[in-house]
Length: 476
Image (tube, rainbow, N blue to C red):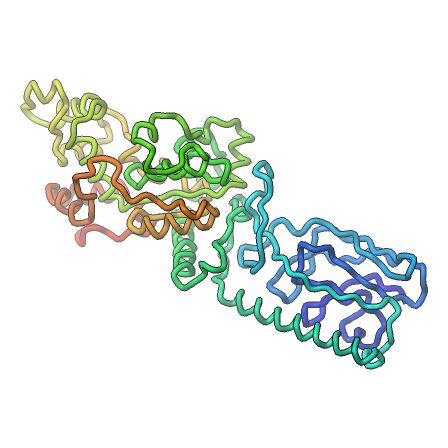
């Protein structure tokens, strides 16, 4: 009987040409060291007739019980050699394992130019076994020393399988990812980091993305069917070395995130060495809309896409404090003068000349006016407009309120240098306290209940998509 088919036994072994129960009968002998997906797959086949071509063994697409690892994507050709043995032509390992699989071995990155860069790789373990192509028809007929070695190898393999199953059970299950996402390039932290804290951060990410997708499906269902245009990606910055796309949300840590991207790109050795003007006006980082359509779509489908958001009212107050409570050569003459001229009765000539001294209620009047005298600005525009999260499937959603944990978790996911952490310093007006929920409430206390409600309505999709609570009890 020639052996041409392939099947897995209950212990993670590959039986060739017969069902698992035929193994002990010696009808066919075959084995593959399933934990070792990088090494060449070796098969020894038994045949009653020497010199016969055994055909193809359709091992591709088969999954063993060892962590769900997949075999190579192509069928190996099996032929008998001059000694009656058959060899499988090795192929490259499966390039895109499921996210739920985390291998305990070393990982090897593909070249930066490869579209598979960042994909999970299968682990490297050296477990193999050679069996004679025309062995005894019963394992009990093996010599005692050979039989004992065989049994020891089987016991060792079962132990390793149990350990890997235990490891996989400890990992959180991966959520379903839309087909247009770059989930295949999203790598996980090293196993040494998989303690309870890291697992909690991973689960938090899954929940944030679930809430965001559900809000999009409910309120922006048509967005997912629109084509991506350069306008949709104009706020996304590109870092090619680590294959990262970062959507800039002003007043949510964007200056320090740009510093981190510059260090990742090799443009600076430390985040502390990069000045504010260099970050925002140096032009060191490329935007995604600078590429042609093919380059945009390629990066959207293969790079890790992330954004960081902030509680909308706090972000609005932070922008107001930064742009209107300090001297500013752009926002005062462009926005301040127009706001004072429209919303302040009996404004002084000096105020109209400089645009300085805008009050928060006047600023909110401008924001809510459908016929506002001057256009919107990225510092207080909706995140849903800046980053198009209903059109672009982001892999990572961080929050300003948990910046340190989220940022350093993300850096571990993309395998950034170990000495690179997210900077904690305040970029501008370092002497002032950061805008907190308490400070934001103080500013919004200057508004009427109707103005607060209209401001909440203005940012409603941001509150909904990123799961922020209503900042005031009287809001509906």
